[in-house]
Amino acid sequence: MTIGAKELKKKYIEFFKKQKHSEIPSASLIPENDPTVLFTTAGMHPLVPFLLGQSHPKGKRIVDVQKCIRTTDIDSVGDDFHLTFFEMLGNWSLGDYFKKEAITWSFEFLTKELKIPIEKIAVTCFAGDANASQDLEAAKIWKSLGIPDERIFFLPKTDNWWGPAGETGPCGPDTEMFYFVGTSQEQKKDPGPGTKGTKYVEIWNDVFMQYNKTKQGKFELLKQQNVDTGMGVERTTAVLQGKKSVYELEEFQRIILKIREFSKIAKPSTKQIISERIITDHIRASTFILGDDKKLIPSNVERGYVLRRILRRAIRHGMELGIKENFCSEIAKIIVEIYKPEYPELDRNKRFIFDELDKEEIRFKETLTKGIHEFERIIKQKISQKQGPQIISGNEAFLLFQSYGFPLEMTKELAAEKGFTVNTDEYEKDFEKHQELSRTATIGKFASGLADTSEMSTKYHTATHLLHKALQVVLGPEAKQRGSNITPERMRFDFSWQAKMTSEQIKKAEDLVNEKIKQGLTVKKEEMSLEQAKKQGAMHLFGEKYPDKVSVYTIYDPKTKKEFSKEICTGPHVKNTSELGHFKIQKEESSSAGVRRIKAVLE
Image (cartoon, rainbow, N blue to C red; front, side):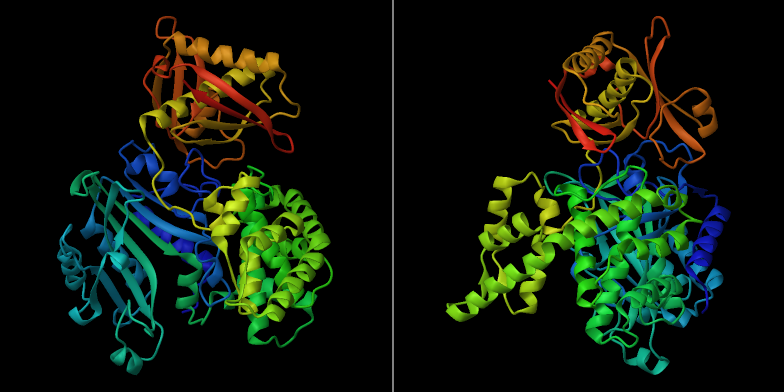
């Protein structure tokens, strides 16, 4: 099979368009108004409101290719298939078709479009438990399509169930598709998916959002049942090409060859190959994060911390390969060249990408050598003492972070190489005293769930529209939204502006928002073409990719019909501004170069 990544994506989109799906563009890697995740980790995140029942302007059938960042498996990066950044193909039913159509189309795409021999395919279905029955329906559909009983495996919730994202919410069984990468003789003896040593590789997953888990722990059938599918582009392409690793794909090989120009290692060892792969993946992920129009930069908090962590990990592995000069931006130039035809934002923001990579590499190298020297001193001291288990204290790990910029994960990685562990509980206590870094980012685990849609969060969504317009009235039209983050407790709003706001400007913006709340303005939703929305002057996020049909929310006076705000948004929103309560700006500060940040609450 010689199909490449670009051809796979093209075939997938065209196939589902024939099944009356509307294509939507990849959303930003930095999700809007979703406190459950730091980055977009799956195609479902931009579709959260529509999975929960809101109507999508493009209809009930959606198809896309979504950029994703996941760091939950960062320690596995360097093996054959794990990646931090990847592309995810997805097709969606928002309360439209269900299992029969989803499974049938999956089968048709694999066997007819990709021409995978049916005998190479195996599937898994949910085995059932005390809360939800065995998914015999999915198995029956697979059998009707020609998958024999011996290649239909029933696995428990740990393998074949999605969600809920939190304690409650939408969830349901899934069915996964696997491709056998060994010989026919090996396949006869293979124990099957879900077992150790199997040569079946997962390539696609169809999730059936069938149930709602209540606070009482009951599983009730949902009124709107959705289909959420996912196929990793890189992994599937590698499998179809008969590659042993995603890093053998052409795109990755171009990056690796550039790394070898710097390392001057023609025949790397196994350990050096792992370093090459980590650099390839981490610089690729960093390039896409920096290339996002929201201009995220490395820092010690939240998303910026994740970016700094993977960048510094790449730099350290570059040093392991003996690379002396700065190399990150040169690797990024290859990545931009490869992906800019599909992701023009990389070309548009390439100067920013290269500059930030150079700055971070210089900054880190200034302290890295000293930090490693201090780390080695700690290790030698402990070995000489020979007292109990080989453990680096949390205080020592925090010193390495505070003084030398070592992320905890780097200290753990270095320690493991020496046969040591790190007291992470003690480290986190020290960390929380000195930094505002979220615990989520600290341990590198990200929830992968539906955004909060509580009553308060819904109110904050509407408040961001009022604040956005108020800032433009007070400061001028250049004050444009650059991002936001909402929780049930507060809102955070980033906007383009060079100078610190004066106390008078802050009060004017706050008063204007409260004035519009007291006026009881109507919040109206309309669906229209993107072109029509722009003609009507609807505000929209800088650099955001929108489908050709969008939802527009207008906030206006029902008596005079005079509009205050018109904005493209996915919602959700209140019906009337009088529901919001009192708006209070708590803080105005710098977010990054040319971007200010407001933190506010509704009282």
